[in-house]
Amino acid sequence: MRTHYGNWLGTILLGTTFTFGAAQAAPVEVNFYYPVAIGGPVTKIVDDLISRFEASHPDIKVKAIYSGTYSETISKSLAAYKAGQPPEVAVMLSADLFTLIDEGAIAPLDGFIKTDEDKAWLKGFSPVFMTNSQSDAKTWGIPFQRGTTVFFWNKDAFKEAGLNPDAGPQNWEEVVDFATRLTRRDTNGNVTRWGMQVPSSLTSYWLLQGYVAQNGGTIAEPTGDKTYFDAPEVVEALQYWTDLALKHKVMKPGVIEWATNPKDFFEGRAAMFTTTSGNLTNVKTNAPFPFGVQMLPEHKKRGAPTSGGNLYIFNGTAPEKQEAAFQFVKWLTSADQSAEWSIKTGYIAPRDDAWNTDAMQAYVKEFPGAAVPHDQIPHMVPELSTHENQRVARVIDDAIEAALTGAKTPADALAAAQQEAERILQDYR
Image (cartoon, rainbow, N blue to C red; front, side):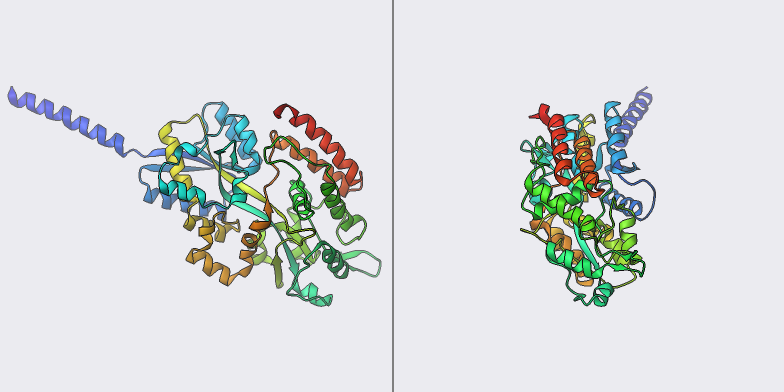
């Protein structure tokens, strides 16, 4: 009887111990929405990072869900949140900060910052990238794949035009001068090469922000409830941009597509162009000629906008899942991983210690152009971010298109845009 009882009790205890051990060993699962539409090099980089994170954090399992464009990612994330099944973490635009806060979808990260190491990690991000990451004295997002606009030129075209191939234009006046000399026309007067090209589809407000910052102005308050679309500095900036095509005739008129902008450069249809720093690797790989890259030319001052995605942790998930998501976010944005991500993708590493790593130092030595976005950080301004940001951005984008196509003067287009933005934002003040 004693033996039977002992065997029975031992079986129960063994079963209990096994069950408890299994429960303790089961990793916490984290769903990670990442904005890319199809497989390819970026997904392989993300998958490799996740594998290495899981190896060093065996108690956490991260499932990458490739969720389409930025627009599709925020739509899917908010739909999942409203359905009670949000991802634990997602990469979404830093400019969508107020939209995510207004929806109650994201959790402030301040509650996860507990140790001195956590505090040092958070302080390591460049302040300009934190402007679109913080609001009301709380941190809502962590800078991850951030960018800016930079300036490229074809060195062979410069030589042909009698320009110094190692020095791009340094101010607005030089851009017009250089572009005039670089524009080529055939015997019938048809342009075979434009001197300058600036993309104006999709987020054209972003390019305008650079000109406005160089002109000493701003297009919005960082509080997200006030815009200055019709301010003199903004009107003058848009006038300069439209004049490149409509007055100086050194840029293709009308709307210039983002996707074809680098291709026009590679194929010799544009001698100079402005694009995202995220195209650095693309230009380095595909330009069939020597090229130069520099900070944006100045006017009253230097100026350029930030851009790109933050990592956000969602509300509506279990505390242990949020904590696991935080550990993933912190690891992904540490110095070594930030440097690796920047080298492999072309995004700016948003923290200074990433630029001091051996890997980054070696890469900049091999490709000095990679340092240009980092050197521009002191001159950057935060990207337009307001309540109902997608609506407000569409208003200013439409105004820019109307000016670039000649449908309206910059002053008239921006006055109408400001009036509509006021109507959208008045309830948030």
